[in-house]
Image (cartoon, helix red, strand yellow):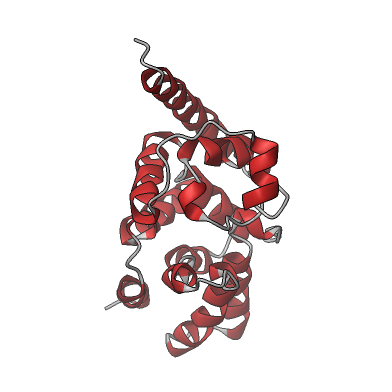
Length: 222
């Protein structure tokens, strides 16, 4: 069994949130490898980081205090796993850097090319048809809203800690449309690779079109 297969098995045991499940991890993994084609990078670091990037997601979701950051905790959890699988100490630190910086809302900028590619791949999976599907899985899991007509600035002040990219305090008040207005529509400008930006523009357009159609149907229009 390869060490990457062992990582997959370890991660699969940790994940239970269906919006951040093993299928999401593998989509990010495949997207990352696609974006990395032609780049002179450490593919072992990228592969390991992609597989481990959400390993602490369930622990964050279960922490009602909101203090757990799955990117920070995930980097810590990755260390012993990688060392046991004979990754070099340099590679371990590199993978940890990738994991810490993959999250949009943490404000920790990706520095290495491997970290930038992981960030881009993870964000692409929040857009397009798969992004729409995942957003409503999230709605069901968190008893959130299908649609919510709110003043975005006021909402950010009340439920995002006063800033658009702040962490959500009460998930039941959130919705895919709010997520689009506070995060997703800004994603393209945050991406690092041109390949990802090209893909993101198409996926973002689909997501926007879907939300516009949803709003019309909620209003009883054709």
